[in-house]
Image (cartoon, rainbow, N blue to C red):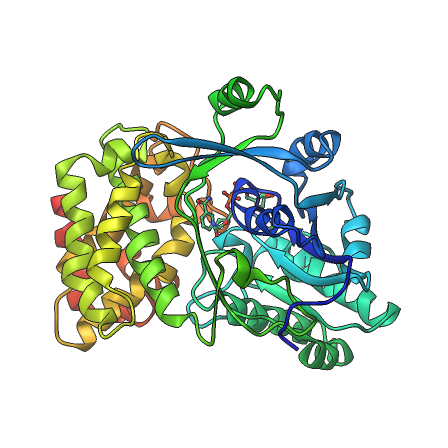
Length: 455
Ligand code: NAD
């Protein structure tokens, strides 16, 4: 069943009350409601307690907030988003979240828990050394796996209705990866009956999501108040550009997303490869390089000729040959992406985009390195990306970054140990978690050393 649901009150539960969900998925659902189709609404929840102040503010505003969007030319628009009809307060056991997910009205459960929130290595294996994963294996709900496992066990017991699990994070094959991680997690917990139920009662379509959404700075609320008269305590802002591509494989119905511009396709593969390698990887590269030059914002760094050239060369020399043939015009996509990064009104920070490097290198960058070698090409331009990250982490190790570096899977002790070792570059280049099989390649280690020397 992958058609729109003909019911008056279906719930789309979203886990991960960050800015992105409210600028993206909530906007699409809002457009449907604004167009007269109010069959679906969102219930919003969070696994960690860090979103509690935001959830409280949203609850006081009945789930409503203003989204400000801005074009590269500086045209701003304000829209009150009305699709979040239920704000689920945070509690230690996530009891309210789990009850909502188990409710038969809930037909889709989507999530944005960041790239680091999946704890998977290159081979899609679950990182059992992570303390949060360990806690969840003992029955906790600190990660998406423990939370979804509890929620689905409850659902199975209560009513047994099928549900679609929709990963909206920037991960290659995000639906498959999440499902694989969940199944491993359940296997480790020896949950045979629940595993069988999940196999037949859930789907995890892959999705590709896109809209640059910085953390809202205080001046967003000021502009919103000026433009709308509303003293919004939870405004959000993003670029005008938006895209959502989803594999049309929903097991319990879906909103008529095609009516509001969502692309429902058989395979997201070409879209996600283009996005992850061209947009996400060059974004991180620009953020690491810009930080090293003492810059705060993505547009300043994109506007710095040497950094622009690094990103341009990486895409042109190494990514385009890796992704060709493609149904997309990849060179045009590159140019649009770099124009979007140059948008001076977004004021997206290098800090936000530089985050989660330990997940982004293996996810966004290593595949291009590997494919270049496979076709006999030395990935000189791509090697600059991990080289920048190495210097960036060296600064972190020296307590010399201008901001707190956030990384869901950062092993601080291991990084300090690496930089205190006799040969940090070799330790970095031979890290299998970052570079997979290339970690055993002497030519790659040499290339990385040369690239680090040129940063
Ligand atoms: P954010 O910092 O505003 O929110 C992050 C949310 O994730 C918070 O609710 C936090 O509690 C939760 N979280 C963090 N680590 C977690 C973990 N290990 N387990 C469970 N929950 C965890 O970030 P955002 O802007 O909303 O972006 C979230 C994700 O959305 C990104 O990591 C990315 O995968 C995707 N995304 C973001 C953008 C963007 O421009 N912001 C664009 C495309 C995709």
